[in-house]
Length: 105
Image (cartoon, rainbow, N blue to C red; front, side, top):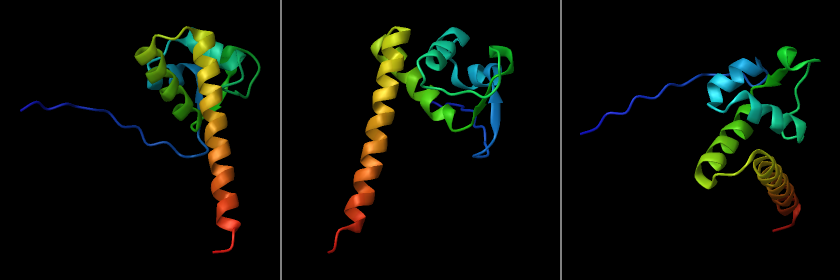
């Protein structure tokens, strides 16, 4: 029998994280996170990269990016594109679900 240990971090929905904290939680290098910011996948508050504050909701996008990067060996710009497209698909599915809920039964 194999026992695997995992670490969990409980985050408040409106909590903010620094770039270093997000790097540590995601396992992605800071350069990749900067590329995701440059491409608009992540939208930080603050001026310079050392002052960036990202919402805890961005962890989902970063974790998805990490899995995509390792599974498909994507470069940084392709990774940013795929994450943006997945986010857009998720938005469209939510919109479709909302519209379907308004239809009479």
